[in-house]
Image: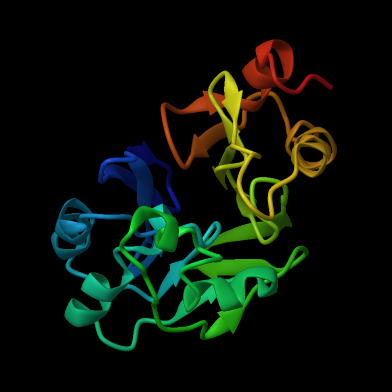
Length: 214
């Protein structure tokens, strides 16, 4: 958990892929960041907040980040889904979201809003800058707090690793450029909250990540 005066971030790893999914609560406002397989632990976090989510915001649309959306919508109908325009079709297409390759095709509703680099999203008293960080997927997004050193990076950057680039529509060169020109330009103390694995910092990854160096 990350607790700041303006917001609290809680996370749970979901499903066989241990996808880190998050809630961000700012006052009486709540976002969900990604919704993976077997989402009951995520639903428990939402229920414990006592709030209805204002949006499901997707870092990207691979199946392990969207599979829990139907369960959330059953409990919280009409929750809007936000995503980058490059992956809006992926929500409905099991080939693009890779669920077809797992033998369990997934198609979910939405999107209700397309978000792009340069936007500022508001949650209660907190604001978040949107960065487009493609490479792992063409519509991958990062959300950076304006008030505190925190960034939710999806599958762009991990502790000691990076997102896979051997998938269809992935590119190592594009991901490396996103990391160098957008993530590594953030301050050293920014906490990196990834889509898988433990939290790290920008400074640590810039200095030691073996896959992408500045």
